[in-house]
Length: 125
Image 1 (tube, helix red, strand yellow):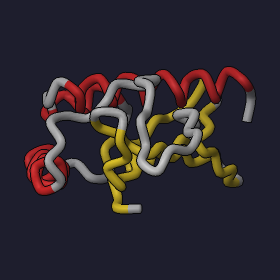
Image 2: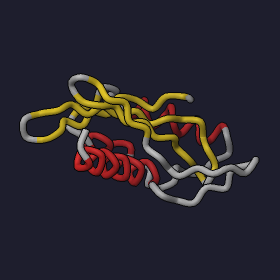
Image 3: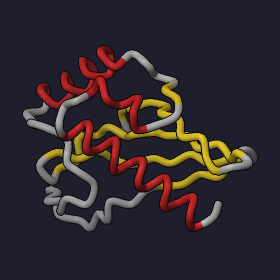
Image 4: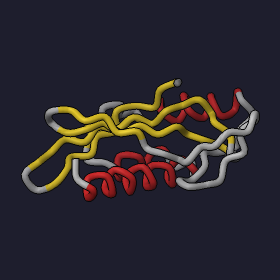
């Protein structure tokens, strides 16, 4: 995985978080090349239900400062997992600076001319 691959992955995560922050779930497919979990209405119901159940308003954009209780350091780090045909990227979602215990999971496949960006799922941690 090159530094450019990481930059592409982080930009993809930023784009998805912006769509989630604005609750424009129907625009998720515009952020990637393929949606493995492609029912955006089901995604909306699932993650909005999680927000509502835990008293959160909306997901944070990438890089918003976090106020965890108890306090510990969190750097909005993307976790990368290399695979023979590409890599996976995972990111813990937050709202109001607090973890919401959902993890964005993406897959990236190596192509001759770049990367194929795949929305895998949003899964409980």
